[in-house]
Length: 164
View: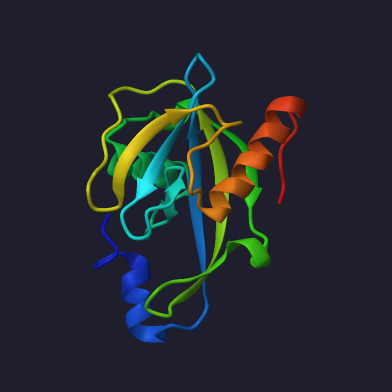
């Protein structure tokens, strides 16, 4: 969903640029060859992973499914999502946007190994999509995505839920 008209946009009309806590989801689409799907943001040109904030009435899984579909065209079944970690550290996940809005994002991290469709950028949020080895991601990489990739490698190595 484009920012204008979203829950966060409506909230911003009331609170202005003040800090807002935003729940969301980030998804690692993992192919059999180990490649992960990255997306290039339209707004700043940085590479990241499909992610976004929750809308009213949503939950983490619905947010994950919706963001992947909106940004890449890929269709996921919520039953195929594997929750493997979180992102929440204020020092890493507080974002000041170009217009001055400040958000502290809390994300549930998901892994998906099954989906339908081929990735394509939406042209609104994503300018490009790219399959890449998570050990050699495209650059420049969005800092929250870099942190999530480090947690992902830790999860793959240990199998333990990654709380951060």
